[in-house]
Length: 260
View 1 (spheres, rainbow, N blue to C red):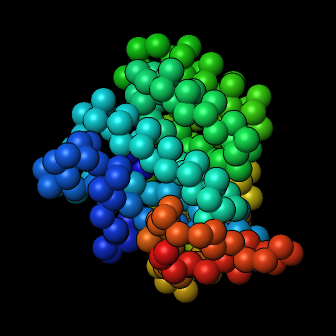
View 2 (spheres, rainbow, N blue to C red):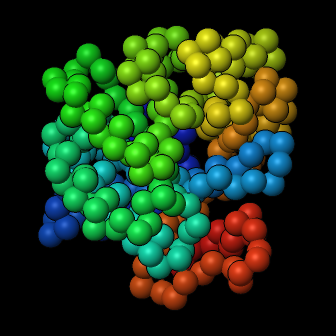
């Protein structure tokens, strides 16, 4: 799943029946989704829109989570093919890659012409991975396809996930905005990340909901951000309607964020 306890979610996401565990019995589970624009804090660059998926009312098992993430991955590729977004980010857990590697790579292979427009965020507990070589081979393969590989930090401190970060060697990382209002605390987060090899300009801070948080993020040196104070989340576009990208020559930041 993209979302777990502690992650920033919209106050009310949109039902994602097509990503549910069993499409024939959607009422038995609650899977929700939203698109989070990821924007630079010091320029008008729009890096990617993240297809953010989470469950409500239950904790999915490893294979349940894998099925939802695989459905989300397939949805992301369709959105690219239908020109609903210019670049999209998806989350895959270590468990999904480890247990469903063939299904994951088959999905990538089926959409090989759009792989370069995808951004992958990995997450999970490294100590629970039984076959780390499978995950590592997938990471290496993504890089050979020029797909940016990120890591989603779930712990309160970056240093608490140093083993996973060393394992992934991420091109960027995403973490939740600090709860402190002290600028020194925000700066310490960036310094911790830098100590692991991740530059501040490659850090995405999520959950920016106020102008004060945005100012703190800018002052601390974060490169990118997500949140209502940056750009509100929007309903994942319908894949049944015509393309919605702006005319050639306009920037990605002018894309209309309304649902299809």
